[in-house]
Image (cartoon, rainbow, N blue to C red; front, side, top):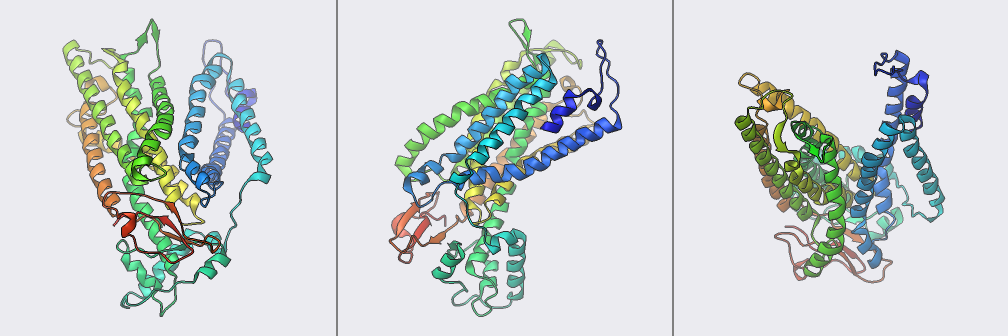
Length: 487
């Protein structure tokens, strides 16, 4: 941020413009300095974004009932604060940059970031730090390679008898959590833990199964991330063709994106303080509903968003045909606020999708790989943007000969056809998500609580799940991480 602030504040570091608005081209040195600042910021974000939310969630003690309940709301308020900051940036900082100056506009967040960094370091003595074990430091790639090699080497061995696993004392001394064996998904990996070979433990195999399951869920979340990318692309371009005048003031089409943030900021407290307690009393789940149920609601809302966008675009095309407003600069006599419902629905859906994805990947990550889980979240957002660009390019090329669906002139295109295509895509993805969710195996941990007594940690009820009384009995002096396991 310091480099960016210098780039917009110091005259030698940016092109100079005349009073008439004509600007000199940027020099190589100016471009190089700007890119150096942007890449430095990207490297810093790559270090903080996957880790800071994980670090915050790790401050809660899973063995304390009160802290466990508060932790269930952590990611709701984490995203709330993030989007609140984004809203301030859009409404306040953009105004300061345009009306006061770019230097002042960038100095404000730079100073704020410096103060937050100081505040973070002041709290260092009060943080809970989890020790880094040797297996954690080795990383997931080494673990996956080890299990895959062992499973391939034992491919001809029958799966009979017990699998290789250390005892509770070994895991207690190593500071790790023992994972219980799961049947069904990725059963071929179990051969890596054949007792006679002792190549891998059950816990190592289960950790790889968790990563594989997370990858499958990650793939079915790419379509929702692609739909979210429409906010800053086609939604904005569509809005520029509509009547944007309000009380004599012409509002920017991109400003409608703030309604996504506003609706999300309104919906999160309602979800966390009203809906979750109501669902908790019915299901016994501290989260109210399960992680995948939350994602399922988000996927359903994504379908409604695209359906709404398609209906609005169909009406816009009908008005164009009636009024003959096919010119590239013609304003369609239709209020831009017809697009408001799709923005609001997208914000409400983010309460289930964005927060749900982040929480799911954190919760289901193997112990010691929590940052890997939150990396799934951030990489999904990036992949969604790339997938959106790819879809637009492919559809534009495929339809160019008979009238592009997404041409430069939207008034003479068929954006409604493209939205209909996205609607079919989201419906198909919704069906695929349900299929994946019904077969997903939640993580099961075997924890020793100071050798005292058996306690029950979190209960998760899913469609087709077992009731608590039907679950297999765990050994004494352990905790049950997921009391409802999807079969």
